[in-house]
Structures are given as C-alpha cells and as structure tokens.
Length: 292
Image 1 (tube, rainbow, N blue to C red):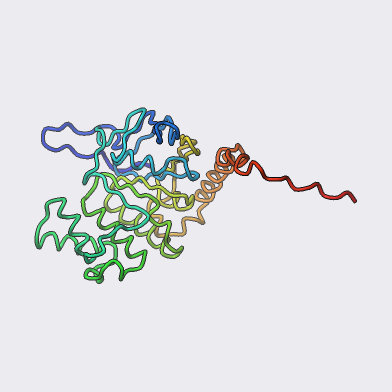
Image 2 (image 1 turned 90 degrees about the vertical axis):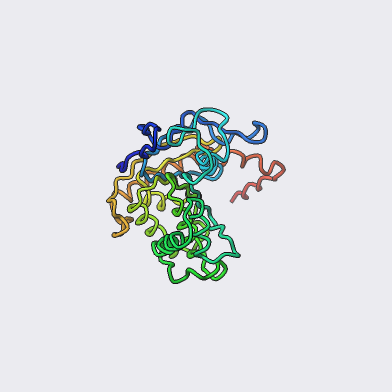
C-alpha cells in the first residue's frame, strides 16, 4: 500500500522522480572498524510512506536513522534523500525516546523556536505554534513548562515541534518506549491520524511488533549485528485503522505471528545469543541428578 508522491520541485531544480529515501548496499562500522553495525542494507521509502524498522537489540536500527538524517556517513554503499546525500536540516526531523524540550521555555515557545527555523516571525509564528499544539491536543497547556507536563504530554510537544518545520522526512527513534501502556496506545492512534492528514514520510524504530504493524505500511525486519535485512513485510490493513480494533483483524494476527516466528528463528539460529556461551567461561556445570 503506497500513498503520496515524491517531493515537488522548486525553482530550477528537477523533480525527484525516484523514492524519497534510498539506501543501496549500505554498511557502517564503529571503533575503527572493529564493530560492524550494519551490512549490505538496501531499501527505499516513498514520499508519504510510513515504514517501521524492527529487530533485536544491536541490529542497527538507530544507526540507520542517523545515516538517513545525515548525522553520520556510511562506510559502504549509498544513502540518498530526495536524490541527494542527506544533511541535517529542516527537511529531516527527529523525534527521540525523550522529548528533549528546552526546560526554560514554555510549551508554546518551544514550538515557536522550531518555527523560527522556517523564518516565521511575530504573530504568524505564535498562531502557527498554537495551531500545532491544537493538533496534538495541548492548546490549553501552551503557557506551561515542560516539567509541568506528563511524559506523554511532553512527547506530544516533541512531535508538534518536529512537525513545525514541515519536514519531508520524520524519523522516530522509539518515541513511545518510556511511556505507560495506556499513553502509548493513545499516542500511536494520534500519530497515525496526524500522518494520515499530513502524509510526511516516516521511518519509525521500535522493538514492539504490534506497534510496528499498527502504524506501518511496511515493516522492515532486521537481523542482529551486523544488521542485515531479514524480510520486508507489506501491511495490508485498513488505512483508517485507528477507528477500529486492528489487533482483532485476521491480517494483524497473521502478521504478528509471522514476524514473531522469524524472530524466534533468529534466536534458535544463535543470532541474538551468539556470545552467551562465552559470557561465563568459568561457570561450573550443575551436577548430574542422582540415579534412582
């Protein structure tokens, strides 16, 4: 299920006719090449598409976000956003596990700070900030400070701030992981509703299989270090899935079971626990049980 078109052209620049995000044979290592984080990663994300990255810890999900954002460069292969090498800027917005708000600024002034990047001034900037807060249900908390908000409310402000710059790509690194179950469920539905209205391309990192299925049009399953693509799964659920109990749908159940089967296979193959055998080299094996 694909929606939306690539970004429109401006001025003399030619239109981007390919995918909005493109990775080809991407590899990245750290510690002078001693730790290979990802290897031979290739996938595309179309304009307006919602894609989730899932997989065991250490499979390179956050590394991929940083590569797409232009914060780090690949050692191998090619990463393109809108046909160009990515660079940090307003076209690429990141939402983290914590909202990372400026504690000395009120909620509305946190949003206005982001809008200043787009060149908005004075009354226009304030009105736009208030509209963004209204879109995440926080207009009444405009003059509050971050410490006066719950964790879920802070994440709403972080999302509004990210959307304020009108990015072409929204990168989200487990934004709901630290929240309680009820708040997570609410924010998932709100995020999906916002995405359906704005059609910003989203790359979403999560450890939660159900979250990935509920939010995404495609789920990219990664194997552990070095991170490699195990499978790319299409999610064929109703688009307005926030209006129903998606978990009860047969397709949701099928996808959940399929992805968990793939992860269990990784564990059986030793991919996730490959170092367990040497973690306790001096451990003494338990004695054999006495014979009856």
